[in-house]
Amino acid sequence: MVNKHRLKPLYQLVVNNFHILVILPVISIVVLRKAAQLGPNELLSRFHGLRQVHLFLAVFLPFAMATLYLIRRPRSVYLVDYACCRPKSICRVSLGSCTENARLYPYIDDGSFRFLSRMLERSGLGDQTYLHPSLHDIPPRCSLSGSRDEAEQVIFAAVDDLFAKTGISPGAIDILVTNCSGFTATPTFTDMIVNKYKLRVDIQEVNMSGMGCSAGVISLDVAKNLLQAAPRGAHALVVSTEITSLINYSGKNRTMLLPAVLFRMGAAAVLLSTSRSNSRFRLKHVVRTITAADDRAYQCASMMEDDEGKTGVHLSKDLLPVAGETLKANIAALGSIVLPPSEKLLFALSFIMRKVLSRKIKLYVPDFHTAFDHFCIHTGGRGVLDAVQSSLCLSDENVEPSRMTLHRFGNTSSSSLWYELAYIEAKGRTRKGDRVWMAGFGSGFKCNSAVWECLKPASNITIGAPWADSIHQYPVNISK
Image (tube, rainbow, N blue to C red; front, side, top):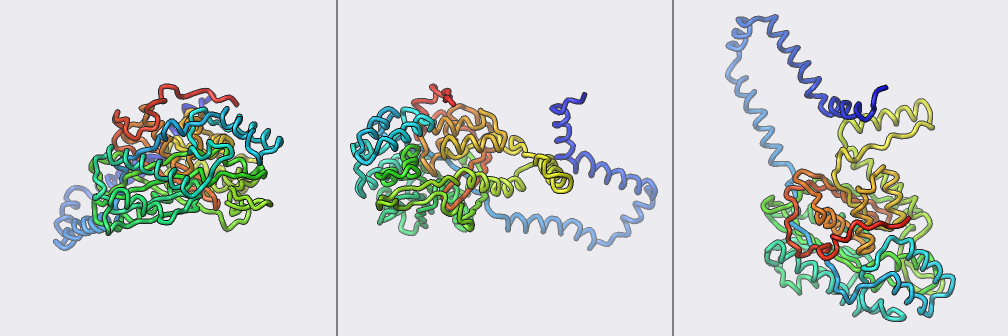
């Protein structure tokens, strides 16, 4: 009996290198056979019969076309480095303290308390996540000043570490992009950063809000487009965060209590450039998918008021099915770009057989290990990670960065992907040439992907490294 595990690598070798193993040898055989038929004298006479203009065109046209392609090709965008905020220890909160505090909240009845307790036990969070001190009070004390204080804490910490890590001066920043879904301040976060670091008056700045947990990848795409239109060697600062003190919900609707279980403090600052010098990753692809045209997807995660007028984030029962459908749409677009021909062929054959023969035939799930070496799946919750792992046939090691980030830092929204990459690098797993897939999910509903190629593995610098004090404790076993 043929071992399929031995046969598949051979199949991949042949299909992925079809032009080298089959097409080029066939062309060579045809050309050599024709040359043998003509003979050396006939070949020389035909060569001498060529006009100089023909020889000139044969050399000039390929050279001209290659030059034109290089000129018109979009500039590559590189990741110089990034930094993630590890909030102050005074902000640290354990599951036990969350449970005990919830018991004393005046708006939490017995049924809501039991629901919150179960959700905390199953959340996948550990005892070292962070909440703003205003949420440690009983009841939580949410205010505009508290939200601003949280924003300044996490954003300035991440940006300070990034500047210290890269050695770049604030005056060298040409583009600034920030994103935060739930809190929109006036002046904006971009204004706050410009004021703090005294950035240039001609800086291009974009402040995004309401884009959900996938906004980190959207910010990358916006910065990439601005960089490609800027002078060569320009720098873009991207800051992603979520402000938890304004997401707190003081009502009894259980579908609106769940975000309080998952969301935690955090922020990431990212430095991009069109210069490869000193850069650590190349941005290969960004693929964005939005399904908001469908009412079910549009309404599955939204900020709203309950029957008593209390504001909070509402998560509908359709969240997981919608997330799965949106992920499939995003993967279909991404797979056509990154998957090798061998995987595309297997998927196409299974699709045709399913259509022609029987719908009972299982559709082939492409092996994404052939396209990526590392996976950063948004820490949207334990259920989301379980569903993604199952649908993409990922191993426990593939989703380890996501699960450990959820355990150590909770759901830090759009910045979570950078905490996951920091985990992979803290474990020393990245090598030159490795490909990293970042996949973020968010309200709308949106699924956005970014693909990176590693140019230079991480150094031993601990500045802006969120795992510096705890990586030796991970991975931990998380009970089912």
